[in-house]
Every structure is written in structure tokens, then in C-alpha cells.
Image (spheres, one colour):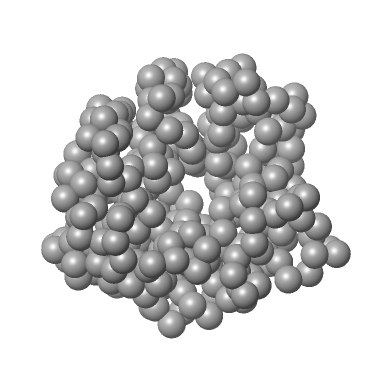
Length: 274
């Protein structure tokens, strides 16, 4: 089966060439380079990966993502993060797409907390013009703003990162209701990466299985993607890379045809032009 990891953060060991922000959030043991990802994903049978800019390490300096994606077009797609408060960001996105082949952009709220913001809209318009996928990262409190943007950009493919950060606890049902409500927008896709991050246990994270199946049923497997949260030592310390994948291959009880879409085919269509 063709498997694509749609959520991998990478960290360069060369911090002179790729300097970090002040007080970066570091992966344990210095693991997290592109080479580490290649080794771990290959061992798990994963054929390709989306490289997601990690703002807790580089903020809006996308050079490591851009260089890595440009040099590894056969198996990676770069997803950058740009500031919606910087009026130059749309031009920067266009240059990153032209010069480095960037395929996606992670969309975040503006500094004042608004997602439905002129700077965000300018970036979404540029992404639409360039054929770039938007990954929107936000919480339930901005679900109504996500809905407005989706309505105003119906032809722009958008992915809901971590599904509004679904997690076990008193907020699970309200967050799930918002995620399911947004499924009515046909251009929205669900990134079903929340199983280990939202679970209160380790593998197989059974307390999130029913939630994951509800999301997949609502969006349809053709609008759902899997991602590892690499490096798992930092982002999913109770669940390894191989275990995260195994949850979707075995523990959720997904049919072979559903697995084919969620684990690879949907991602190929979005970021790899398949």
C-alpha cells in the first residue's frame, strides 16, 4: 500500500546554517532531521512525507523546509508557515512555490488572535492562485471563522490540522461537534493526527478510536489523511512512529479501501499531484 506521512516536523543539526529561535522546543536526543525521518519512515513502509514548518523551532524562517523539499522532490512536499501580519508574506509564498516547489502553507491566526483576518485572506488568495494547499491550525473557538473562510474560498483545498486539536476530556464532544459541522464544506479535509496526541493513554490509544472513526465517516476517507507527528519522541512520546501507523492499519478496524485513501491516496492528490 502507498503510504504518505502528511505531518512530519524536521530539525536541522546544522544550527549555524539554519539558526533557531530563542529558547526553541527541542526534540529529545537531538533527533528530528530529514535523515532521521527518511530512515524511520522507510522502516515503516512509508513512501513519502509532507515536511511541516515547525514554528516552535524556526518561527517563520522556512529555509530548512524549503531546501529539504527542493532537494528531495521525489519523496517530500514542503509546507511552510508565514506570518499573516507581514504584508510581504504573499510575495514570499509565491517565491517559495516558484523557487523551491513548496506545495502547502500552514495557516495560523494573526497576532491579534483573529483567523478571519485580511492578512490570512491575502495568503489564502495567493495559495488559490498558485495551487497550494492550506493547512489551517486553530482551535474550536475559531471554528466559525474557519467556516467563513471555507465558504469564501470554495475552490481552495484546505486541511484541518489535528482536527481542532481533539483530545480526551470535557471538551472532546464540543470539539468533535465543531469538526463534524465543518465537514459540510467539500473543500475541507481532515488530518486525523489527533489519536495519540489526544489520547490519555499509550498505544493503541483506544480512547480516541471512536472519535477517529466518526471523523472519517463524516468526511469520507477521500477527504482524510494520516500523519505521524514526527519526531514522535517529542510530539507523541507515548506512541512510536510505527505504533501510530499501526493504529490506522490495524487497531481502528478500517477496511482496506478506507486505508488506501486515508494512508496515501488522498495525500497524493493534495500535495503530490496524483
